[in-house]
Length: 348
Image (tube, rainbow, N blue to C red; front, side):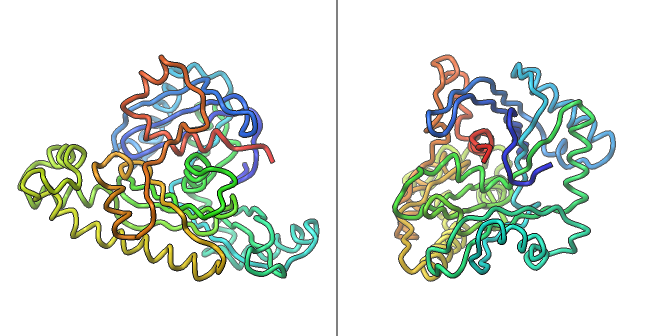
């Protein structure tokens, strides 16, 4: 099992809070990708949170059902790992010839993993010479608790499928939502159900990866309490009116503004941290994913708060799809960023 590296023939699996997404692409990043197979299957939070043997069996059956629905034949999976289950950081080490660096870093990696190595699965990718200091090389280190990784692998392998790679979701997001060769850095922000993940890409490499507690669930509860409505009604208010001050006498905006101000402050803090570390780097844009890309006026709000041009992300920007696929995916296309990013992995 590789935590970060290439995997050969495979399909991607992204298990979210409310749905499961599967994608299989053909082609390459150089010549363009084509969507071959996909599936979108609604699920309940209870299904993914049930750690009992019966719960794992049911989740495995749901995964296998989605694979069959998609018509996928290969058994190999690249799986997205929630940022809340992983620890990812970019560290600096002495610049050495690549073979020497790989050899020495194997013995250093435990310094960068926040748990005993006996309790973790860890991997690393050499990003290259630091943009700041040619005497230093940047290395991306990612780890996940061994118990969680092995439990997940066991659950999936009981279905007859085979996990050949695991990758933190923010890295997959960045791959799908950023443009290679950009001069300025790009911050990708994924506003999910229970957490907000962000990654800053600079010179085609991740330079900062963070997960901020709290997601759209916080906003839904705030609206439900503030307007005295049911959570499902609060979700409808959020997705229909968003941050439009002209709707519902501005009540939804006032409620959201109090909570989103803290999120915006965290994004601005991340921009400052990056630009302090990378003296010649500039965050030229923010790309929004998941709920952040569909809540009305959310991009305008973030741009105003951070001073950085902000836009909705398009995870399909490098993927060719047929007209029938576009119609079938129209209402859920924004939810596929992680699955697409996983499928756009190379075998380098």
